[in-house]
Length: 460
Image (cartoon, rainbow, N blue to C red):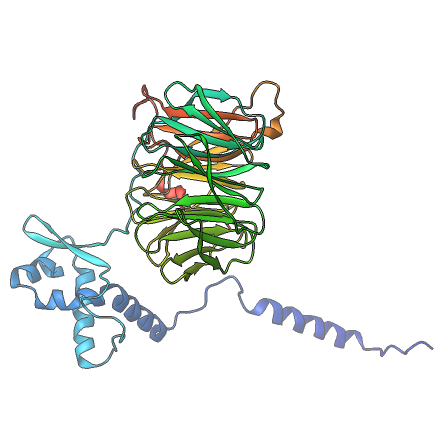
């Protein structure tokens, strides 16, 4: 059923059309509306109070000479206009016409600072704090490749005298190498699975090792044989470290615990429980907190050794933490994760800064006394950072051995020698690579590509 359309006369239709046209074009949509004087005045007063509130008392309480120098009438070029506004606004403040914000005081944050120019005093905007320029470090280069292991090289330990270093690998053998020449000195067999952690004692002729066979062994380097076993881990043992001042060994592993052992008694002093996943890295230091652990549960825990419990839990990481390193001289440490490398301050684990850019699974971190932090990853990349500023001054891609496939470019362990001048890495192509600083490099030949204006720019 069709609906009837109401018919209008031509006169009515024309009149309606004219009315619509009139309504549409009457107002000029492109012109700016007229300003409201009251709103403008309020806006001006708010801006003046915001920018000059901190120095109004200074202007009023200054000497007559300063006031003459700041007065607009004393300067023919008309530069005193801003100060007239300040003085006028100061009078209005005292008369109560304007209210000063309660949170601002004259001794607070000052947006302007006074500078003496000749006989006059000027007010200039305070310069925003800038990033400190990073220290220049020479680039590192590969100078020795050592072959000998038949499996992935998983851990490295340098002897306190800096004469030799030990490596453990997937071939279940611990090999000891001369640091100066790179020649093999000794092979120790005993583990029945991959060796994952090594540490050399500074006080006894002992080498400690742990592996995926759940075993923690103590080797006597005078007899070159195992003299003690430490039983207790329920699953693979992934890392260990020696306490620098007391005879204590700390191990961690896939059973989500950190265990503290008495070296002589072979007894487990503490089983530090709290992590909810594999504990991948553990470090010891003499000061509190004495034990630091990083885990696949994305947390870093600082432990109270005397009480045997957690002192602080750092939950900033979003992905598993596989590497932790302490700064040799500063009271701080770094933790590595695929999302970021983060720096922390002891004793409470206060966050210092993020080192962003190494977008890979970070297996190892090492830092030397010159402030060079190295991060090594699963894809064979190494990034070198300036510890203080977090500036990434060099990136390296480890070269795979001839005959290896590209996917074997992973780095599992990274360690500086005790002088800090040699960097040793253990890799997936079954080699040990040693790096050193380029002695011919200078600040002119390898300048800092440092641009602070874009360096810290956030990416959304």
